[in-house]
Length: 581
Image 1: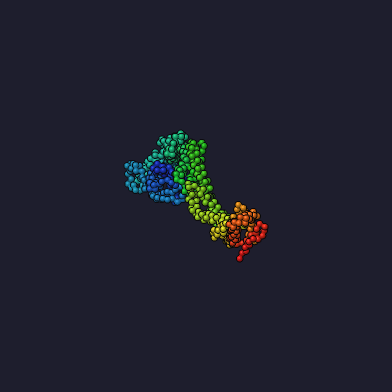
Image 2: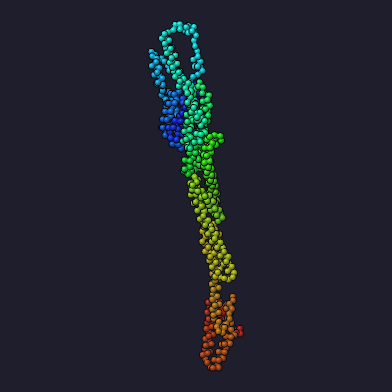
């Protein structure tokens, strides 16, 4: 057998096996079969897309039955069958088998009935698979009488009988072979079927409503192609059968292209029923949709399958666009995660060296940028779980930075409050407003002491406490003095006032100076003159008593103020003087 014939036979075997799988196995249209011979051993590779449910034992059983029925040239040869997933290099299952030899019982029985051969075991039956030019030439050879006569000299009658039997058996078997070969001497129904499928292909395609219809049409085309290839080269229909076989094969390949697209689309649709959990799953779905689109785009505009291909293409491209859109989003989310990691590294470095309020504000803001970027990733995204893990890592340092920043802000505010209080206290001191000065010095000291030792303001605050405390004490002393002076003024004002003003007063650095008012002095003189005229001593006692009370009040005021006291009459003469002990 030539190499070309061997290759044709392998393709025939593969087509037959694929037809049996489509007919006898659920989801059989998704299986592809390839055959090869290595070291005179037939190897069969059966593959299917990922996601197809496979009953391994059923697959091996169907293939074995198909081989036993259709592949007699491989009988008594070891055959290896492999199962694998498309795109995976190594198979996941293997079965080795040897087909038992099958005999044509009917023909052998007829031979035994017509001929009785003494030693039948010496006869060897070798069926002719295909007539060759040499065999046809042998049929045309005839012996001339003289040659025949010379060949009969010394012949053995028994051998002659055996020879005649051999010729008759050969002729009988050869005739049987010729009679059974399609389209050789019988009607060529195979050709009629093929012509019908070839001529009606467009109409048959237009009636397709489902993948099952398409699968049935492909099985018919493949079956017709197999039958055409069985037509002998000796048949007058040989050339026509080859042309039809090529045409039907092209139709079948187109259908196979569509099936390949359907298979990829079906797997993609199944995977799309559940949300993708990672970026790789989305990339796999994009690859599947591209695998579904590519074969359909290759369908020629003039092909009968073009309309069906275009209908599916619109749907598949929409799905691919949706996956691409999601991938673009996921790419952005992935970049956000990468960016957040980079920002977190910067935040860690800033946090390690932060000292001032500005430093801690930058630390908090940097951590917040990283967390905000991760928070923007939605829960439906495959990147969501990674984002949440990073958020759980970044939140503790972010919270620590926020707390530290809050402490620094409070420290800054308190420090500023202390500084402002010191400034106000000094201003009030210049204005001799000692009450306000004391209040602000107290605020300054209290605020400085409130600043936490862990704050960056603690050192500066410590520098304020000691001088502010001294200034507070001084202000309190001056406030006491000012309070006494104010009270002295109030007492003097109350003592010197009346219906007739009793006196006027001046408070200076030298003490208290009181001057009896002329009206009051005149009033006293009038009272004394009246008492002298009326010789009323009670009036004189009243005047003296009043003057004594005035003196005692002024002495008390001087004692309380702890300052000297001088009293003048209306003419400016000293009438009373009190000095400090």
